[in-house]
Length: 172
Image (cartoon, rainbow, N blue to C red; front, side):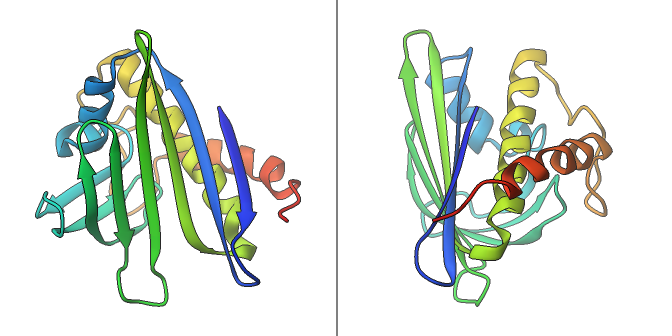
């Protein structure tokens, strides 16, 4: 898995993580956009599932908030704005592409505070690792049984283990 971080300006930055999965692009798209499948690895979602629609999300990391679907071009491109119109607004963009019988997922989040990029990069890496486990196991629920009130213990432990590596990266 690859994770990178960079500054957009003096105050904000972006992160990018990507990985390749042993599934076709249509299955990967479904894992990312179907609410039942998304709940197995990243978030509980509810709302209006169409471009321009608003979603309410609770991530395994416990982030809870609103998201707007800006672009939904199955099975290759998804853009979501978290907390649109607020000081906390960020944009999450995902690209999915076929690589033979496998598929690549690239996730970028932009508009994050420069001082917290490492937290988000480590978090997205854990989410993509959870996606791998969900795809490999065919899980029908998140393997650690997380709830919306606290992160799954395994998620938090892995995130904490990755933080020193991401903190050591110079963001320029």
